[in-house]
Length: 239
Image (cartoon, rainbow, N blue to C red; front, side, top):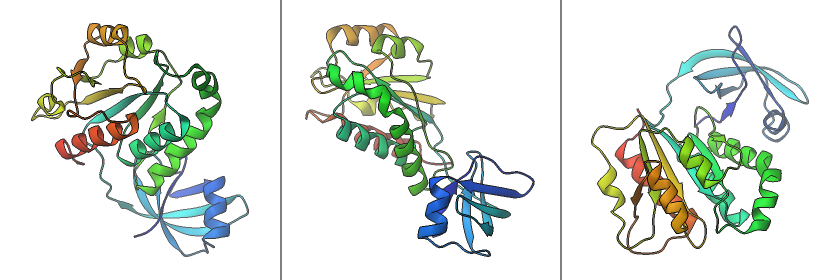
């Protein structure tokens, strides 16, 4: 299987890879003119031939389009900030599994020191999402949005289906909210360690979210992310 790289754009049958990916391709993989790779500009994927290799860039000529699968539904994750090692693992897996956007959330029970440091890690989170998307052969990486409060993200969400992952014992099973016809967009909200507060539950329900449970066991936030996205992938696989 050919390696895939993400480029800024295609221009008149040509493309240029720059930055870290170009250095990796040129210095580590030792790309040479004539070799073939797959390139994506976020809209389409093309088979491309290397035409020139420089220290900071690799030039390509486009050869032919490549079919590439994508999810039939746009999935946004509202992901409460947790310990960074766990948060970044969840972000990486969400990028691999097709999430369209990841919104970090400053939940009430998130440690204040983490919230103070979170904005400084935004560029790192974008890099993790980019590399995970490339590894999983996505057309484009997910957008990693700026940190917001639960009130802001609940109020701003306009998705067709909005689910708040809940650990409360009376929350309905996630499977009950899976319609036969795929919605155009889904938002999945994941709480922090310790869960959502009663105020956050109320804010979400007022904004049109429905509580959804992943079962009787208490899952870590990062585990819940993978479980919920797996259900979405099975319900509405790539087109």
